Length: 527
Image (cartoon, rainbow, N blue to C red; front, side, top):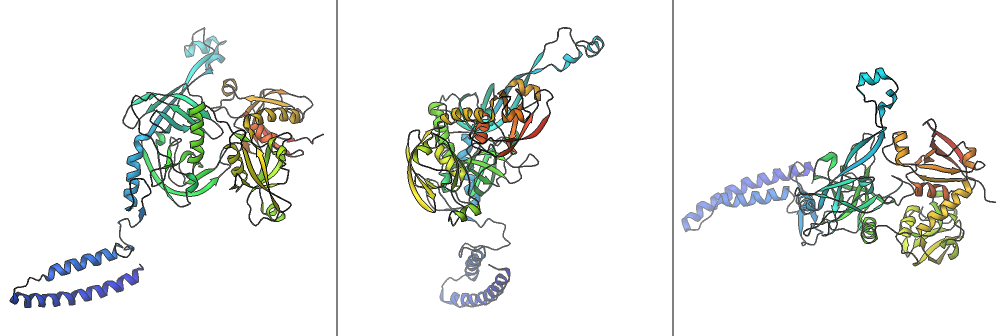
């Protein structure tokens, strides 16, 4: 209701009130003679109460703009029943029901680091000055600690969290909301989605979260995040869903389909739940985009549907098997959409088809645009990648492609992504003349790295493109076209799917000097 209109109505109400008061007072006097009981004050009190309700919006769904009381009311979506409740009550209900299932994770990493005093070993004066023994150890054990959040997913003590929270941990402690502390073991990890499952002993049935359908989440929907930012236990923040289907936030070769939220998320929130007002987990808080290192209203969560799929696989088998088509894909640009007769920039363009792969056997060709997979619309390249990965190995699925401005339905039998790793390694060796391996503690110590990002060149063909670009054995490769290389799989996926003739910028670290640099490498043409 507009303020001007409210003031006009208020004047009318007050004028009518005075008239009513004197009218009822006169009636009261007349009634006393006949023995009837009237109360002018009682009638006015009831009248003003109705007027108050009108201005607060209880009668007409409106509220006084100056009121400090919350006027937002929502429909309950949980299983406890229907009806309405105000926003504060909804947040309180969700927090109270979920906090017992949210845990604080404390991680310890122990590793050996070079003794910094070895440089004084041959200098008696300095050794005496610092009080150093003659037989100094070459290495010291360094202990690093970290914190994160997790959520209990079943009564057996399985806990879902982020892979980066527990990666490289030598000891994991879990603190429950009731103060109990337990040692945890790793059940399985999945770096490609940055998810992991750990387990604590369950001597009794444990409270656990319930999951919602992240596909039904809507932009601007209210959400709540629970976690342990900077070690502050059971911190609850609220916000809305800012966007869906965010990609390119972390490892570009991973499987991403993030929910974006403005709910305050800080270091330590990783692995905690993002909840709707029905008390259902719709996402796993994972990463923030921030220049300050703190919350700036740009938080990202892994959708619950992806998280549940990964968690079940890790609990059942300790690993995640993924489907594979044997194609590389790229986004549909406005010019590509126009040239192919698409009304929207929707779908995934097939950039390369791997020889002998499932896609080639099914008749999928370079230049096709995938519009649907298993009857579900494909919005972009990441959408196709995620849906294929979630397929069962050997499953026959219908793939709808656009070719020469006509739609075609093809049947594809999905392969295993493990086959891709083997094929990609062979392809990269053939194309670039290199074999790579993961960064080890040796390289981490040498270059002062906190996390094992990048890959190490283990062997190199002296006549290959990488050697011509001045790379050598033991050098590190840390990024390609400004996209970080997070693992061997990441490197193989990024390089193995590049079309022949394309030039890329690789950032590397010289193993002799420790200096970083950037060089251009051209993917050779096929013979």
